[in-house]
Length: 452
Image (cartoon, rainbow, N blue to C red; front, side):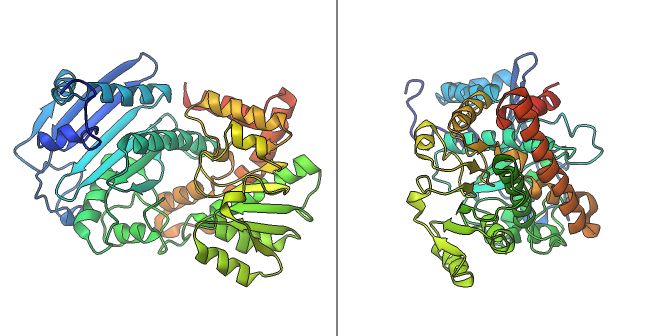
């Protein structure tokens, strides 16, 4: 088999680990000098009882006498043996383009769990005095999903988390954890123990994202596996979707004031795409209080029906396929990202786009985001990159992580107002003075804090 002639299952960073009975792969990059290093290892047994994690052993304990550690050249040779150096180079190129610190991969072969910590930056967290120096969500992908797409998703989101954490004014760098595995049974402590072990290895704190329920955080904390996860229902703060929705609402009001010179949203038509963890409370708790017409769209029928039934005179349904062509004042994307590209932007009839969805612009790098934001601006659409205002969740996560049982929702809301009201207003006004888009101004200001 020649280089590149790999099946879908073989085109994976984990394939050589599985074949060689290894557990760990690390790819590190230093953007200042361009140095890339690889490391692989066998650090535990297939029969390791992860249900005993934190009780019987910690993330620093040895788990087998049959360890095997591969250095940089040995790891490269390993991938060469399986005709995967081209694929490894592709991953390295993605890491370099985003100026990431790298990735750490942990494998539980028995349960087919592939855990990747996508590490973007530790600059803001390295001297914070806590175990966790980075923060970002944990999301689940199906085992059969294309791995390179999972990696791209994780790297993009970790880069956004660095900027989001900076914009949220919290002392943590950015990361994102992606896990390819079957749906997790919350009574399966072997799986949950492994996830907690790998999480603690990453020196990050996290919160459940797509594919993981808030109950996962509750079980991990309640059973004593790790405190490095927030956002469960047991929390004094509760799921992070609520504070995120509040921050988006504040940003919407600032955007309306800036664009229409009005202190309220009254009289506006607003389209909300996605009625999940953020979109639902945004509509139910905040938008219905305004004198606005609300259109909602979601491929999941139950939350849409529930909101329409609850507010029949205020909330109307729109077909999810039509959200980018509806004629309304404000578009609030709260579902999947990557929805705005050159073609879709041409069809937009909105004056403002402010939403909770991550990576709303279909771009793989900062330059492309800035370019697309300029196209929106040229069309008279006020847009701001999402990580400037969907920060309520990370603020809530920080509050819970730092203060545990003493965490206060009042602290979260006041911090969110500081960032998503006054911070957003400052970004709009400064961008106008400098003659650039709010997205470009946000990148200029916060990248100077991250890359130093």
